[in-house]
Structure formats: structure tokens, C-alpha cells
Amino acid sequence: MKPSIYGLTKKQLIAWLEERGIKKSRADLVWEWLYRKRVTDFSAMADVPAECLQLLAEHFTIQTLEEHIRQESVDGTIKFLFRLQDGNLIETVLMRHKFGLSVCVTTQVGCNIGCSFCASGLLKKSRDLTSGEIVEQVMKVQLHLDQVQKEEKVTHLVVMGIGEPFDNYDNMADFLRVIQDPKGLAIGPRHITVSTSGLADKIIEFSDSDLQVNLAISLHAPNNELRTRIMKINRAIPIEKLMDAIDYYLAKTNRRLTIEYIMLKGVNDGTEQALELAELMKDRLVLVNLIPYNPVDEHSQYQRSEQESVLAFYDVLKKQGISCSIRLEHGTDIDAACGQLRSKQLK
Image 1 (cartoon, rainbow, N blue to C red):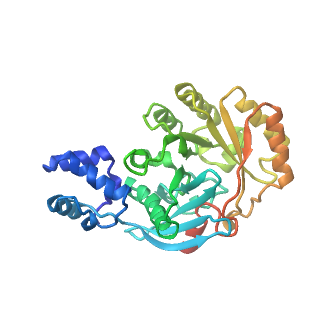
Image 2 (image 1 turned 30 degrees about the vertical axis):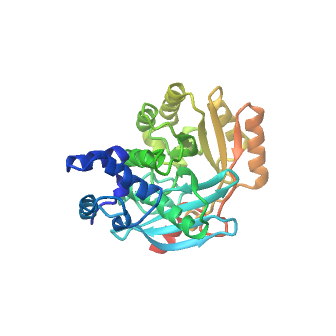
Image 3 (image 1 turned 90 degrees about the vertical axis):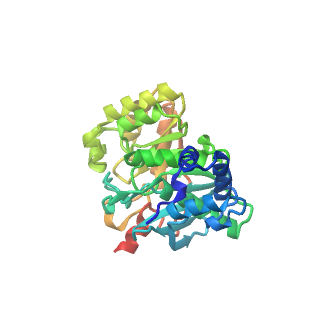
């Protein structure tokens, strides 16, 4: 199986062609055909010399993902289930916001983090996605938009799909460099958010990188006892170590961090937990995002918090001086939970 050319950053494409005696200017042409004109066949690149096209076609393919299922919600959310070349299935989601069109991408086939409320981890990780497979998710969504809504473009990205992005760090980083390129999709770093369950060492590496995109931490509990119960990663990386990494990020970047907090009825949504969370986030440049829970059949011990509980939790945080928001829901009439559609298909 030939790799996707989407997996090459602009610098990598230039270097690859130059090693084979092809001028840098050819890379600029190829890049424009891929990301601006969005062709899906090398032969369609009309002004690229035949020698260059033959070389590319011998070593790369453009499309490696096949659309398996598409679910469309009444609110405009679209969930795609893609089949990879090796037969594995992944999910990608298009969401419509007032500020633009956002795509949520997957970074791994399965997940090893093992959060007890999440559908993504129902099947263990079988492999990482290549950078090309991550880029192609965005391209597939954009090609869909090109067909049905000629003027619409993907404007925002969240790396919050199946898998732990920081457990596939290098491929994720190359993906971010490709989709940010100003001569390509040109999605700016302030329009991109990467979410992690809290791999502290990688948070520090990310803080020192040139990526400049937004960071979100999946916290979901304000103390070690509760977080360990619902997120097994907390055994290896307790809250104290995670907070040290968060403080490093805040000091290094001076950018606001998002704290993701899924509201689980009777588990983490009480006044006591809200006060603990407020104390934990005190004097830090963070936004706490309260997330309605999408129930998963296999995790029947969890239910979504009542609206009154969510609003009360929000109220406590605000009164304690913590910036917070309540996430708007998308796709509630389809398989809304991350990994849910894939899990159903694999049963």
C-alpha cells in the first residue's frame, strides 16, 4: 500500500523532490493542486511536468480513505465513518457553528487511555494513524463541501476524535503543519485545538514546539481519587504532575488553556466537586468547558447530569472567579458520542 501524499509537509515534499532532481518550484505547483484545487488524481495536475507526476504516482497515492457511512443530523452535524486501506474504521465529524465550520479528527485506531465513560476506548488501540490519514479526513470533508456547498470551507479544527493525540505526537504534529500551511488549507493556529487526557511529558514538549495551536486538557474530576476512578491514566499521571505540566504550558505560551469537564450525574457534578475544581484552577489562565455527556450503552453506569446541576456547577465556578462555559451540543439525534458509530459497526 502506497502512503498518502497528504502525509508530507511542504518542507518534506520539497526535500523529497529535490533528492530526485526535481526543482522546488514543482513542489509549489503540486501543493496548490492538492490543497487549493483539491484534485484527487495526479494526472489532473495539468501544469506539472510528466516526469514529476510519474515519480509521485509511483511512490504515493492521494486518497486512502473510503467513506463507509455518513450520518447527518438535523442541526447540520455530519459524522463520517471512513474505512482505511487496512480495513480499519475511523470517525470524523463536521460541526456547524456561528463562527464557521469545524472538523473533529481522529488520530488513532482505537484508544488505550481507557476512560470509563468513553466509547472511543471500547476497543483498544491497534495502531496510530499516519499524518496523511489524519490530513485526509479534513480533505474528505472539504471535498464533500465542495460538492454540496460550493463556497463553504473548513475554518476550524479540533483534534478530539478517537485516540489520544499526544500518544501519536509526531504524526499529529506533521498533520498540524500541513493544514496550517498558508499556501494550502491555511487554517490558522488560533482556529485549531488539540485535546489530551494529560500526558504531562508531551504537554511540555508541545509547549516548547512551534505549533502555536490551542490546547485542551480532559480533566473531568478535581481530585485524584475521583479522577483515577473514571480515568485510569490518573494512576500513572496524577493531578499534581498534570498541574505542573499545565503551569509550564501557561508560563511558556501565555495562552489560555481549556479544561474539559464532562458532567456525569451523581459522579462529578456536585457543589463539592465544583468548589474543588475552582480551587484547583485558581489564579490560572484557564477556561473550564462543561460538556454534556452523551450516553454510551456499554457504560450504562453513567448518565448525563440534569440541566439544573450543570447550571448550578457553572454558577459555583463563576462565583469563584473561574471563567467557564457550557458546550453546545451537536448531532444528538445521531451517534453523538465519540467512537459510538464505529463501535456499533464493529459489533
